[in-house]
Image 1: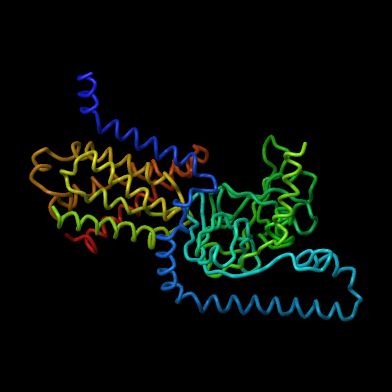
Image 2: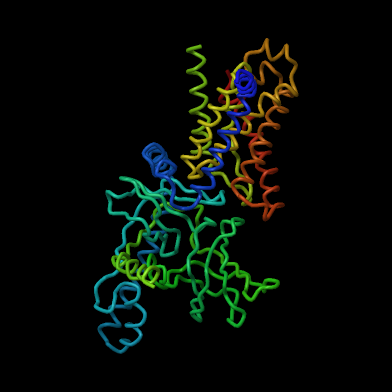
Length: 287
Length: 168
């Protein structure tokens, strides 16, 4: 027994190292999915406050650019609104209208399904395999997990963790997250994810061979995930090839949003999300 | 003891701030991202007890993990270099120097020695970090390229910091 203690004392540094290393590696394995322990979340009080202070200082220099972007977005929205008003007044385009716009903003009973709000990005990265974004709004401001995050109408990510005043967003540039996406021209859909290599490109998978694919095709959201309305722009197809020994295309999608330069993001809440989730959960357990 | 504890606490804070506010925003040519926070471990005194070194490395790694949403990734990489540091020091320094000089600095140990020491620490840390982060050996060559190029930038920044910030 005495010898055992002697042995432990003699090699206590090695034992300590193995113990601590095992602990941290088990943390890598257990927490590295996208619902993490609240402490390991850049939305926590300490880092949230630090990022908020620092970004409010640095972003002063970026606001000119943000203003220009927002003015552009306003112009686009204004013209869309104008077009919509014109169409509804004349009545001639009614058929087109009821297919396209209602899916974005309304359900069949003409109530608004999606609620929009904005937040400021206080921390963001593109240089890791699993990138997250921290924003300066939290539970207090009505932010909830699973809200969609966009920038200039282009998909950016999904809210995962929410604290009192901050939230973290899993970025599209995170190999742990997948979103369904379709080719706008022909409505064929696949699954979109990031391979961790290039922060400007993501990959559209599970697109079978018979689908006509072209470089330059726009890739948009399907609306299946309930967090995003249908038809939000994700990017354009920049390259595609036939993978060896597989039945699917390898499609590279050039992202529309500039992830390296996110300042203000929009958040989308689907008011019917709980209802949809509840309904879908019945299928899983009901059988 | 009191003064040096405060000094090293300050180095800890500055290293973390430099990393999370400055270096985490750097991404050159889509592959290079420097990690210079291990400065703190690099600069600790020679006579730091090995078990204390491990705990300090763990604390540093966990702090960075909190800021980057990567539980355990930086902690495990820091622990590794915390554990290996005495071995490296034994390898490149004589026992008499380790006993007579208080802490590793460019001024006391010389530029050549400091560069060798920094290269060892940074390369081991980056190698472990990037593979843990990727968590796969898929894309081995790309990860290797990221490690080599990022290490070069990290080493350059760490050396630069020795002349600009951590002069004492």
